[in-house]
Length: 351
Ligand SMILES: Nc1ncnc2c1ncn2[C@@H]1O[C@H](COP(=O)(O)OP(=O)(O)O)[C@@H](O)[C@H]1O
Ligand SMILES: [Mg+2]
Image (cartoon, rainbow, N blue to C red; front, top):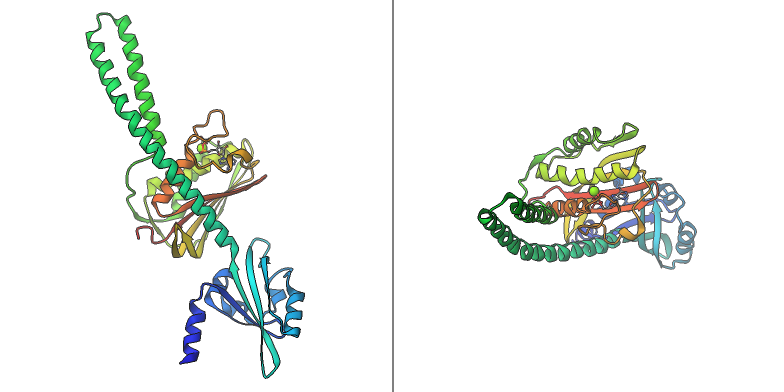
């Protein structure tokens, strides 16, 4: 009974637990550990820690800990599973022994990337919601008198004796219309999403054909799709608009010549807006342009923030709003020659 309880505990812990023997070979790993390393216990059990991680930074310290029976903790340890797959963890290493003979170590790790990402996400979402509320309030205050202004100009127009004078009321009306359209664009689409099962790759392919005509033929599109992804429940038009805004930015960023990659993956046990999802779809739009201007990085999702003379600064703000309506999240990581905009969408989007 006691054994059953402790195995239930291990299976359900959100902390990754790896058990190594005295020769630093993996004996056991819990599901949180499999998630952290994106692998299965069958694939890695029996491997030594130096096979498991490239350039494992704590290899010697681990040997010492096993010998001396001394536990230790370490923050911000980089684990490289492959050249592409790197995570940063805080870890605790505890040697265990039976009959005074060393049997190995328990290696506990917490993904700090995940915690950092969640903190960052909360900041971005809080700011986004605060600015959206402010803008909605202001838009309302502007639209009402604007309607009155336009109506009065129309009435006045009817009373005016000459076409020459009507030109002036015409200007008032067309400028009021322009302002109203601008406000509507800033507010973004107001329709609630209509969720239908949708193939995300079909959406990405559609976007590719849409932008093919606008992009120079020296821009190469690459596809790196995970074909095993299930369909997601989403509003196709809204998701196309969100991703199109992101892909258009990538095209503008690379200019005449460059590479844009559309990549999809599944991620397990992923938290968005305080909700943990078993499975989320991750969509990366990667470009090899010069990267996002430093001064824009903090405010890039705000409306009217733009780095381009002819830009409106609405693309990313609208994309974030639309993705958030699907209970998802949009973020970026940018350095020269590699900018990634990542969209996460939970599979159970209507929950
Ligand atoms: N892939 C990218 N690479 C570099 N900068 C980008 C990228 N995507 C967006 N940006 C920057 O973010 C700004 C805001 O983008 P967006 O909200 O779409 O508005 P707009 O495209 O109208 O400027 C852009 O003007 C650009 O400076
Ligand atoms: Mg844009």
